[in-house]
Length: 227
Image (cartoon, rainbow, N blue to C red; front, side):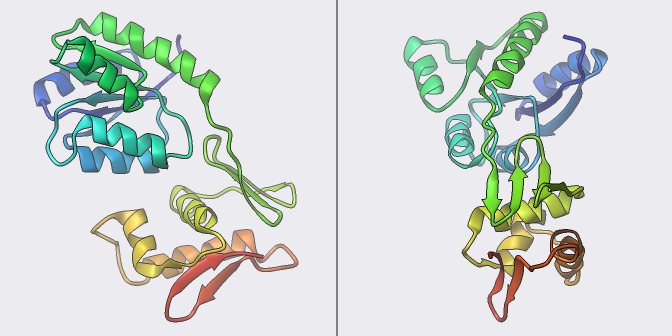
C-alpha cells in the first residue's frame, strides 16, 4: 500500500504518540493528533481520516465512549484500532462492542501496528457508508465530499462544506447561530462576522446559480436548508 494515508491518533501518552508519528510520517503518511477524548471526537467527526488509532484510557472521555459516539454520529465509516494495556477477553469484547474494528495491546511493535492499520484501511474501503444527504435537488456525499445541485458539481471549501452538511443533516429543522459556530469552530469562533461571511459565500454557490433558494434565514433563531 503506497498511498498516502491520513491517520488520526488519539493518545494521551506523548512518548507513544511521538513514536507512532515518527514511524508513519517516515512512510509518507499524514497524521493528526489529540491528547484527550473530547478533542479527538471533534476531529473524528469534522475531518476525514483513513483510520483512527485510539487509546482506551484518556482524560475527558475514554476510548469506549468516544468510539460509541463516533459510530452513532459520524456520516462516514472510519476504521478504529484501539490501543490498551488491558488484555483480557472481556476487555477486548467490550472494545469491539463499542465499535472498534481491531485491538492492539501495549506494548506493541510498530511494524505490527503498521500491518493492522493497512488491513483496516482495506477493510474500511469496503465498508464506507455512501449515505448521501439530499434536500430537493441538492446532494452531499459526506465521505467523498462531493456536492451537486440538479446534477451540477459544486466545489466548496472545508468550512462551507461542513456548514452545508450541518444544515442538511438538520433539514428541515433550524440550526441556531450559536450551534453552527460551535460545530465549526468549537469555543473559539474567529469573529462575529465569520459565520455571516461563510453563509453569504455558500448561498452564492448553492442558491444564486439556480432557480430557487434552499438556504433560509429564520430571523431571531438561526438558519435552515429546505425546499
